[in-house]
Length: 115
Image (cartoon, rainbow, N blue to C red; front, side, top):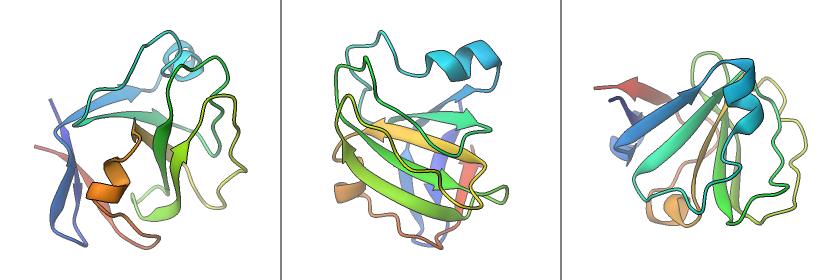
């Protein structure tokens, strides 16, 4: 399984990356889950904004462009919230709330998904 790495800061963000690329997987996202385990992220492709309606837990969110350059960061997004669209973003990584406090990510950082 792939991991999410911050090349700018030379640090691992998540040891496991789940990819949501189909319409159904992107629509479902994290709905129905009780939590997102630490060290895991959901990568939603073709996504410029997210909502947390019907979710049961807060999340940290990182929007990236086609080159995986960070365009927007949202920490601790509570259930029943919505983010504004992130300009120039093409996908988003959702992770457990508190991840970005421990593993900082800033606008302009370049991420990498791989082994």
